[in-house]
Amino acid sequence: MNHNDHVNLIKPAFLNETPNASFADFGAGSGAFTLALHELIGESASIYAVDKDKSALRELENSFASRFDSTSNLIVIHTDFSKSLNLPPLDGILMANSLHFFKDKIKVLKHIKTFLKPNGKLIMIEYNVDKGNLWVPYPFSFSTFETMCKESGFDAPKLLATHSSNFLNGFYSAMTLNVSP
Image (cartoon, rainbow, N blue to C red):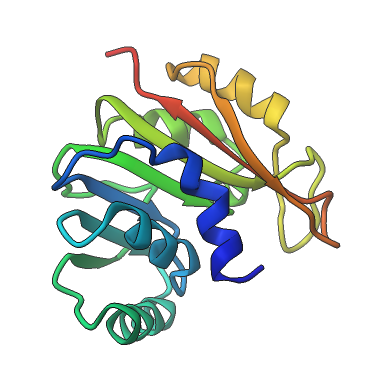
């Protein structure tokens, strides 16, 4: 996938974004989707890029600075997003191929939900299969994500887009809202 593919997978979630929004990319890695997120929400938004891979985060900072001439609205946090985090209430969280590393996804989703404002967005990008492998241990199809959202207190998700892949039946992007306290 290239940058335009990343943008197109999440673009339907950003039709009416408010200025000065605060978003996080949990499992940001080297920032492919962080760059797409910034392109869609703009300079006035704050983006918290969270990952436990320090070298990937350095690569993200370099890519961000060279593409956007500034990192003033990028806050890089070197940690595991499934642990305690000191973040302000967020308008949205993006998770691209990061939840599939956790066996107990409901526990992680309930934790993630605590960072979102009421009606905050959770945007998920994932392989559209329920059986993984050594590199992608616990992927989940969109239909499984629907069940997971219900079990963890999120609204029913909306399928945003799909993208083909030679690996694990392609990707989907989906969005759900934090509707319950």
